[in-house]
Amino acid sequence: MFVAIAIAILFGVATYLICQMRLMKKLFGFMLLSHAVNLFVLVIAGSPLNKRAPIMKDAIVELCVDPVPQALILTAIVIGLAVTSYFIVFLYRFFMYYHTTNLNIIYKDDYE
Amino acid sequence: MITNSLILPIIIPLATAIISLAYVKSPKKQSFFTICSLFIQLVIAVILGVITYQKGLLMLPIGGWAAPFGITLTVDLFSIIMIVLSSVVMLIALLFNYAEFIFNDQHALKLPLLQFLAAGLNLAFSTGDLFNLFVAYEVILLSSYSILTLTSKDKALKNIFPYVVINLTGSALFLVAAAIFYGLTGTLNFADIAHTTAAMGSDPRIIAAGILILTVFAIKAGFFPMYYWLPNSYPMLPPSSMGFFSAILTELGIYSIIRFFGTVMPAGNTYIYQLIMILAVPTMLFGALGALSRKSISKILCFQIIGQIGFMMVAFGDFSQESISVSIFYIIHHVLVIASLIFIAGIIKYMIGSDKLSVTANMLKKSKIIGLFFLIQGLSLAGLPPFSGFWAKYLIISNTIKNGHYFLTGTMILASVLTLVSMLNIWLNVFWKTSDDVRFVTKNTAIYFMKAAISILILISLSISIYPEMYIKLVNKSAKQVLDKSGYQEMVLGR
Image (cartoon, rainbow over all chains, first blue to last red):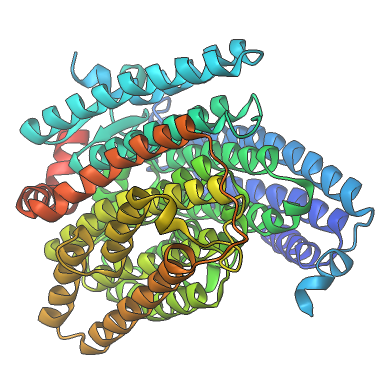
């Protein structure tokens, strides 16, 4: 229950930050979004009962956690690291060209 | 032995990318090496295609882990059609790229990244596992981000930024959707998901997860509300990569929708099908109208991609075997036509120095062959007989009439007319207009090389228009395979 509320808050904050017109806020928004998604994967996978993880028999299932979502999250974290580092370099290049982090200024010509 | 070779379309581009990193100092050698590897990839893809045509579905459990536990690669006719198409377009793009060396320097990492992109695409086309599909999407997206940012100038960054942002959001949503499917069914294997969800019937949670994953694929394909990034970011690429991106990467979204909703999701999700069909109307119209509003060839063609995606979506309306086969036929036609049109636009850009319609002129006087190429493919895009577009549009329109969607039929004809107008717009401004200000860059060897590369695509495209029965037979068979859920499960799960 509390985890679900925490995930909801994380998703909400991430969405709010992504919608801001500042580069840094967008970056933090995406970092939070990946955390929110990882936590979501862990929670929604639920009990390992009736799942297809090969290492367990039904008798000891109460003592186990499901290994599959952990493997998924590990992969997602690695991918998220690569994407985030790419995004930081992209934003750095963006910033060095325009000398501002305000997207309203960068896209000013497009509005007119 | 045969099933083991399913890994080759993924391994060879990866190995090529890593080896060609050793040649970053000598780009010509790197290019030559990559082109040779592409030939091998194409031959392997065609051989696999022939085997798949004769034997049906091929399956490889990676590492020997049986189906629901490990990752499986499943290649059926539709997958192999996409792999062959992507190898053909990639080969032409690399040949074109080889000629581009004469005009400008290129980033040394571009070719390795294109090979990583090809590996990711082949993985996405042949995987039988939802999470593996997510990984393939990430490989594709990361290499495409890198190609976009490495090859473009600083002032183009603000056009690429929306592409990066919307796709980052899309991959987060993909992971959420995959997690929901795992929570619901306890598995990520396509066949096992299909097996489990078939018993759940029309559970609303399945529909919700389906719509979530549809959103992800729709972002990739450029459906109506999510197409904004496409016509802004793709024209920033050099013509060779742009041809590949616009031909294959948008089709990846369509492929994933057909594969996921045809093979995996339980049949009868009428809401989702109708949603796709309704979205097709604005996609076609906005694509065609956007093309009329743009003032340079590559931007017009990028809007045309969106308009043509709308035509493929129409066929999803009832997800019957006929509709799917028509849609696959349209994909084959569209990939060949749009890639060759963008390469032609690339030649014009290199010869005149710009592809703005206000600058270009005199092209027909300078080169009759490019005029002929553009005429064939432009009319094919608009759907005039006897070119391949006519057959594709004829099949789609007769399919909608048969299903009684007359409104869609009218929209499609309107969109085709608008496409024809935008093609004529290019024709008038580039080929027929005369002006004294245009100076052509004369580097004949490179231009000949580019023309020769494009003529391969145009020959394949003409083979559709001359002999469509062969392709219709092929797509009918592949559509039957895509929708054969029980055969797929029996092959993968062995029950």
